[in-house]
Length: 64
Image 1 (tube, rainbow, N blue to C red):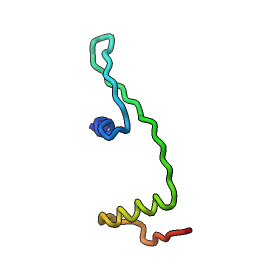
Image 2 (cartoon, rainbow, N blue to C red; image 1 turned 135 degrees about the vertical axis):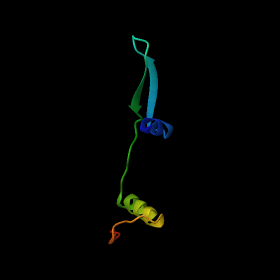
Image 3 (tube, rainbow, N blue to C red; image 1 turned 90 degrees about the vertical axis):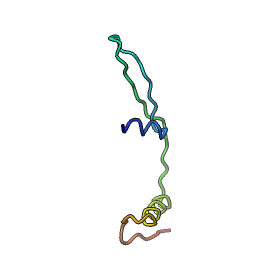
Image 4 (cartoon, one colour; image 1 turned 60 degrees about the horizontal axis):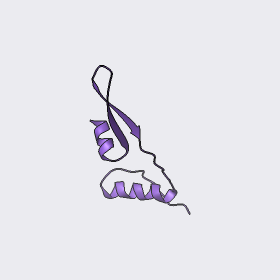
């Protein structure tokens, strides 16, 4: 089920193949991606969590 959700989210791709015995097999591959993390993106994520009512760090301070 987890692989299906990752595939639906576009994070992996799956390809069905038949084994020599005739069984269906699905092979998955991670879709290339790039993550760029900055102080601002981390702070934005913390603020979004706090706005959603989730607990975050007590003393988050911005540094510039």
